[in-house]
Amino acid sequence: VTAAYSIGLDIGATKILGCVVDSAGRIIRQETVPTPLTDTASIEDALVEVTRSLLAHHVVEAVGVAVAGWVDKTRRSVLFSAHLPWRSEPLADRLSARLDLPVVLENDANAATWAEFQFGAGKPFRDFVVVTVGSGIGAGIIAGGQLLRGAHGLAGELGHAVVDPEGPECPCGRRGCLDSLASGRALQRRFQMLRAAALVADGESSLLDGNHMPGAAIAAAARSGDPLALQAFADVGRALGRGIADLVMYLDPAAVILGGGVAAAGELLRVPTDASLRQCLGTRNRSARTHILISPLSAVAGAIGAAHLASTHHQASDLHPA
Ligand SMILES: [Zn+2]
Image (cartoon, rainbow, N blue to C red; front, side, top):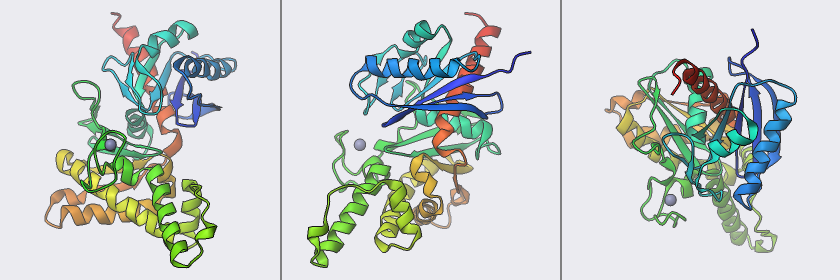
């Protein structure tokens, strides 16, 4: 009996993470390459490169790809991605032909949600939501023990739910989307704005450098008590709690798990988000029992989930050939 390994690829805004994952969701080997943002062919080449590099060490049965974008319901094509140049790209078939392996695509938030359900903070629940807070915001929904994909495969596009109609303009055309108020990019912008205002108030505007501090550095500043960094997390958490309150009203989940890079900030993000959720729901709502948890898998959840979805999909098609 050979060990059943599969590969999960997660295409982020700056890097592609590739992992060999075993059937218990453990990462056996991982590699990263920078994400080429120029054209679809270069991204495809990078995906093939990292996969071949992993295949040099391990035999795998299938490849799953987590994509920040809209994946069609058959999970063969990327319909649209805000950050990557794919438009109705038949990525699964193209990769499968080049790698000679079965390939399955999944939206990155859905893949992360599946990983939480199988191996992470979602294991005890059959109804829960994962909200991924990275450079953008996504959500994945497990309802009755199933991943909820929706009629077109696009369920859980929480990032462009409006939480403040008077808020900043979003590239999607709406105003005050969660993405523009509570994502990693929004955290950086908020902190920069607060810092600029404080420097101007102190007459030290010459110190303004215009560079956005990385999210991890803002978290470190908040931990050491920097009031502006703490305020930035409080503001992001307030917006996030508002968006989650609507989700809780629609879905009545047992838990909401915060994942993605910004969730590595832990309690700094969880506490203000939870307080805002409680405030929005009020005390009479039974859904106020919904817990907000921090993902234990965070940055690797998408790759682990994609790998597991690919291996189960592959096994299912062996049992039921088309
Ligand atoms: Zn938007």
